[in-house]
Length: 260
Image (tube, rainbow, N blue to C red; front, side, top):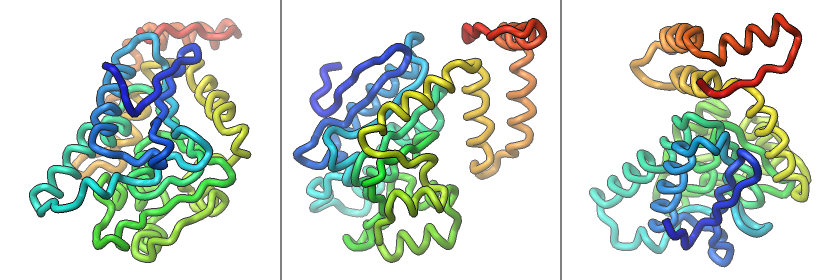
């Protein structure tokens, strides 16, 4: 696909997806969401890609939100379609992806931008980052999974406070509340994300995928997460990576996982 709003680059087994609308503070318009769906689908199916880092172009913003101009004149059914399509084709694709995805949050992550970061498995923020869900100032609520994922990450009370006040939080506050995993100086953001992802990529790929599925089950209605964990644990015993991992442990050597 010929991407107009994304930059796709690779560093070893890490694929970068950079939202490249710097003049618009990397806002998520319809085309960008379509391109994200295509890029994510390709990355998850590409055997050469071990994990993904999502970030925004420039130093000001990760993603400053949805492109509000596209909401003008939209009715109830149109609003439902916007949220449904974005959630199923982008945000849920990330959250349920079979490979680890890290959000490198550089600058503002507001509205849909914070929702994008929260869909990722791990979040690292630059020390100048600011995050929030300001939708109620527009007469809206978060529609890309924000009410659900923020509650899971920071708890019901803090989520309601952030959503209802529409206040932004600093990177330090986000770290304290569990909204992000790490905070680093902006110039160290991508190197920290790569360091963490490269460490993760030394682990067994099928086990990583199983861990994502089991952890996600904890927040899935109607699903017994313990049952999913047992099933995924059991499935690991049928992989060559398990045999290699145990052999390497017994032989006191580094395991060489192949994802099979």
